[in-house]
Image 1 (cartoon, rainbow, N blue to C red):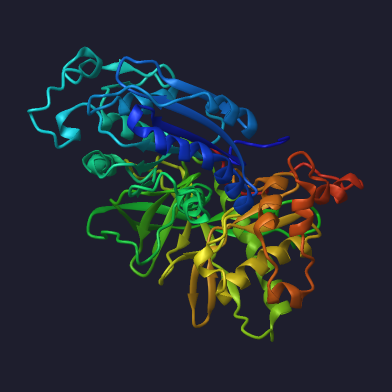
Image 2: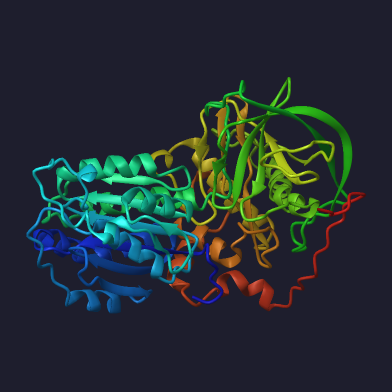
Length: 527
């Protein structure tokens, strides 16, 4: 697909035991892979590159099919594979997983299905006891450390180090167990898998089960973890446990952010803002592990009267003021358009107003001696924590929470995103809607904005994101009352693997895309 970036598609890897006892399960997997890929594409307009790794006993050759987006070619290569061998009780599960690190992953969204009916070698991974003579586990293969050819990281060939390495490098691991005896391995895996990944476990499935219920169950973890992976930020909300008794006080400089001029949604330019210091204050930084999204780390910060979510980019060593401005621009745009949306929808049956919480910019004061997660002079964004049950209504790549699709608040959130595209005449769309519902209305935080020129940071997927939204969006009563045009059928009819023309008509007619400059004063970007 032209113009696709690393967050606009998914890499999916199947790691499967290919010994004789897995024959029926392997056949079911092959039959359902094509349906699974079609299911995910239908749900999210999401392109996928798929790979396969088969393992047997330690020391035996691994079966591999390299990454590819052509499903027919992938299935053709798998067709000649057969399950055979085995005979002992344990297999080289860990070795199969480690083969993933030699693959050429092209997406930030990496999903791994581990399909197995046997334990790995090692008494701690099974309940066979000392009577089982496990010569393989005593060999140098499992005893000596090895070095990853890709990352250069030294690790022991054991389940704990393997899972931690996967988790710390952004893999989502899903275990489909074909025998309940592998429970001990799964429990160890759960305990090692930290918050950067997500583990989904399934009980034994029927090897003849090829109906739609099986497909739904097989794809559900991909849909749910996909939602998390494309969330733009980690989130702290008030009902998430934060220990405010453990942490440290530091000095922080708060900055006032003001618009220099009225923002024009049709201009295809970002809002021009100024930031000026607004005083220094003492605040408490909780010593709680950060929440992690695809792009941001989120820390708990508190004053005497208010709790905040403090956010910094994951892949940036030191955030400058310009980086912080980039982080709050989507909220500024979303808030401006929310005011127009509220006025247009006033009086609609069942409608309640929406509000995007204000984000602000703070700086870790240079007077601090040290700050652990923050460096002296570093900037970051903050927003007030929300008090109430948190819900996610969309992400930035077409995800929809199926359980609440009939709820009024969901319909309002969806209509709002559609409205932003229509009102801006296709220049932008506001997505990744999440927050809480109260008696006074809906309160949303930290959205993402897709723009023609990709002006709004890492979560801006441009036409890919627009396509993904309309590929899953069903117009509801609020859309119809606003007179919004349904684009879902156009998106599907265009196939959109190469054709983005329905989103690019205005650009082709000669719209200019001026260069973008930030106006901020008087802070200098010095590390």
